[in-house]
Image (cartoon, rainbow, N blue to C red):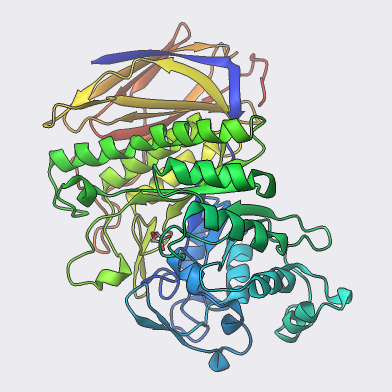
Length: 507
Ligand code: AHR
């Protein structure tokens, strides 16, 4: 079946902030420990304790920003326990996640070293639920004051081996304070937020974006109250939304599911669009100039854990379905990029919709990783206006969802990237796009495809390349129209490069 649309390349919407391709790594299960941090004495090749294979894979997808240390862990975390000589660091019980002992071996210095190694911005989430204003304020001082400033925290930092202050641009004031972060009401949190953020100070030329804890999914009242009471004191507000089949009473395994669960999960994922529209409308009332960013700092699929693993570790496999969930979410974030300035997948390694899985010294890249890789071309590009007939895909329930999804952007070199998805599990799709204002008579077009034969196709340590990007050539450009033939369950990215005779239109 053919789906037709128009790319209006002369109508630019908004910049797709690179931070939309951000990540989240929590002290949860095997994300930080094993997945990222193995320690300097490990036989697994590492740089000052950080796995080389994982760091290289994250550099490859140009992770722009990394959120840490939680999640629910953030509101139990006391940063001073995680500095100084490792063997003397205080231990604690990670009560939220499996009741295991947290050694605090991965702390502030290790996290900042990780960000430097990957080349990303740190996004630190402070503790409101069980922490104090002083603790939060001193953490910011420790991180960002110059040693010459006679700051006691800078002195402490220098004593721990780091004279130079770091730059920290993003700081979260609490996490899920409506739930694990203190079970607060929005009125109470908004007041606490105003108080805590007062002491999250800008030292020297460091400028912090203060991020308030936003709602749980469609809790529009939370957004309303926080914006009403605190909009003038924040730079961004977060929202968390997971694709959780169990909440839909659907079979909730990460693998071994049928076409019905493929459909249900994609259907639920698309709710993100409504969520961002409605939260955006509330924000527009209090912030019509869109100064305040909306940050989706936890998103992704949440299934039952892999059989035989600790239920508190949230370890799940990752299939072509997760790849499609990622691609659809990115298209939604692009659409809302006038307001959505950051998004952070939950989570980077070994937890929930991970982009990387590890087992001892082995590492496997998941189908979701490959979407991050393919879609990195959209980072900081200008979203282009697009209208198209997405068709209807239905299965089982009688509900219909779009059969295809498309997004387009132009980067600063003048290249246009069009990502296309065929959501259907059984049928191929032809997408015909009229290219208006693209300004290319004879573009060179290059395609890459991520597709699978089975709804739950995935990569394992034995078969790490079952789902991976392939060169793609089943398209043609003729008379200003790009026609793409997609197989079932497929994601492709087409790159249009201006020809020699074309005038290059840049972002
Ligand atoms: O990502 C796992 C958990 O989900 C986070 O710790 C919490 O913020 C959310 O409920």
